[in-house]
Image (cartoon, rainbow, N blue to C red; front, side, top):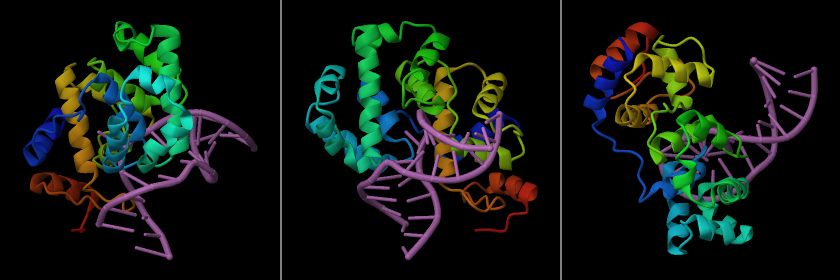
Length: 221
DNA sequence: ACCCAGGTGGCCC
DNA sequence: GGGCCACATGGG
């Protein structure tokens, strides 16, 4: 069972996910921040509010009053910190890149990732989501599901972000579309497995479950 | 009435 | 380096 085989199984089970759901590159970034530790449904509501108020542009977010911003993104939860985080990003964008994503994205992948990580409120996963889904550069996105699933499958031992990311990038072809789809599929599977019971690997994939069950002796669902 | 969601940063040791 | 904690709304 290697990473490409797992990928094929997930694709068979769930089909193409076609992430990231957004109208443009800027919306991807806003969505990446708003969905932190929140369901996509809730992040979507916040995005809809921003859209209705024509706030999904760097200039508009740069100018808007933070209290107003907080009100608009409330449904996404953690709305005060997230309002600050959105401001941190656009402030950074205007201070260093003239407010233009195009300029920021002209950096090399490594430099872009480093720059994003220097912004308060943008950690590993959000940075990689932006690099991959907004800038379209091949940086594999790791999330809590990725670590949970691949640990249970016995494919990874190290649980640190960088280690897991390296494992995927070293064992997969360096391909943007593959990275995009793989992460989306992992999230889809992640929603189907139990968080608290390490032995529970319920999922809609017969062969997958067979493998998981033999590895974990799972009888759930 | 719980539990969880496509995390992050700040503190403490 | 790792282990807690706050942050907060909405859905199951």
